[in-house]
Structures are given as C-alpha cells and as structure tokens.
Amino acid sequence: MNMASPKPRCAILAAEFAQAIVDVMIAQASEEIAASGAELANVVRVSGAYELPLIAESLVARPDIDVLVVLGFIERGQTQHGEVMGHVVHQSLIELQLKHRKPVGIGIIGPGATIEQAEQRKVEYARAAVRAAIRSWHLLQDQVRPMA
View: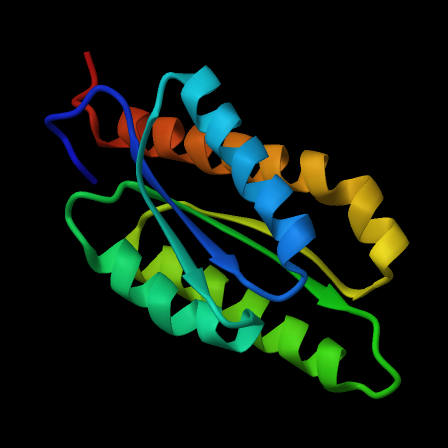
C-alpha cells in the first residue's frame, strides 16, 4: 500500500477477447476511478482470461499500484472450457489480493454469459469492480492506522 498517498493509485487489467465489450468496460472503470478521487496509473491489455493472473501478479507486486481492477468476459461455450477458465482465473485473483494485501476488483462477466448478457452487464460490472476495490483499499487504510 502506498502510505504516502491519500488516494489509491489504480491499475486496470483487461482481456482483449470481446474487445468491443471490454473497451466499454475500461472506459466505465476509468470514469469510476476518476469519480472516486482515485488515480488511474496504468491500463494493461492481455490476450484473454488465462493471461490475466500472471500480469495481475506483476501489477499488484508493484509498490506504485494500490488497487487492481480486472475486466473481461468469459463467454458461454459448447464445452466446459469457459467454466474451468472462470474458476481458475477467479481463484488466482482472490489469492493474489490475499498474498499482496491489495484489493483486486473483479469485473469479469461470466463464465457462462452470452453476448447479450455481457452487453447488459458491462457498465455495472466495470463500475462495481472499481467501487468494491477502492472501498476495500479504504478499509485496509483504516485498519493500519494507529488507534486513537
């Protein structure tokens, strides 16, 4: 955590799959970060959901990043591939925030969502991921302050 900063420095990490949907999610998350008074330090794109945990690890390990927001869409497929991917990616992101004690807001639509569902959810998922992560950052700041 960046103790010198009164506001969190955020990074957005997003998968390129379903680019039209994810581009909107990035824009919405960026707006939500600005509206919260936080600072957007970086936006990083990766190929797909399986690549998210590795780059997320790199970002949350940086001392200049306090909050990470991860965005993407895991579409319903004809096999269990998306379900497996969703479980692995979500579990990895949860483990990263616990390991580094930095909030990771997860704004991944799916697994199992349709394009139509993603279109309906893209704005709220992106904004909710930002709000949750920044709120967690503030709660962590309160916990590390000396008690009066």
